[in-house]
Image (tube, rainbow, N blue to C red):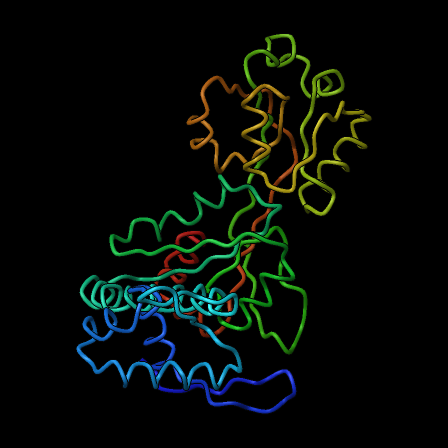
Amino acid sequence: MPATAAQSSPGGDVAAFNYRHLYYFWVVAKEGGFARAAQRLDMAIQTISAQVRELEKSLGHQLLKPQGRGVTLTEAGDVAYARAEEIFQIGQRIPQEVMQAATVPTIRLSVGLSDGISKLAAHKLLGPALQESQLKLVCHEGEIEQLTAELALHHLDLVLAGQPAAHNSNLRLSSRLISSSDVGWFGPSQWVHKADVDQFPQSLSRLPVLLPTAHSPLRASLDRWFDELQIQPRVVGEFEDSALMSVFGAGGLGVFPASLIGRDDLSLMKGLKLLGQSEVKEEIYALYTRRSSHHPLVQSILQTAQA
């Protein structure tokens, strides 16, 4: 347990804050009195009392007040106790977590997923990493600007996005196209009938359609495709997250586009049928840094995609 830490007071002065004093206060508050705390800590009551007084002096407020044969918390003490409870509860977990980390080898892979790309396709592309038995996978979703900033700071090992990284000499990021897959249209059986399949893609003008939001590169490609075919889709929903769009589509809201590279995973959603295949392709880029390119799982993902 650290003995002291520097803490800025509201006036700007730096006061010494002693975590050992905080620990004694925490035990006294949990035990309801100095006598029981002294018995638990195997220390003299006077020593513990002096330590708690030092804590109150450093904080500038009384934390405990007498109640019967014991003590109770003041309002200021309630606040201090709540924070001390968080600190020391976490501290009690440290030995177990350290032991677990030391005895169970893991290979950590932190991946950022741009919110506009197909999550089913991303799952497929991460397949080589998922075969690692000691894998600890951490996935973050967000906008590409946020994810590339995290990648540049080495908080992420890899980012999958629908576009390459913007040129920025300060970030020093590399991009590689790892997937260019045809986009199919899927929907629940209540919307996908033989006539709709036969008349695809014109049938999209009368069926309820779900689309990615405008920030997605795929949406721009779909809009151009609609314009070329002079189709006015009946849009009933727009989604930033492609996985959420698939869930609502499978639930009956409408038909939706999905990269065919993730078609196998769509089979997990019962009742979905293929309406048709468009001429639109969804491109997915892998973004990485020079350092993260040496990560064995990043290398495996890139090499598999290239092959």
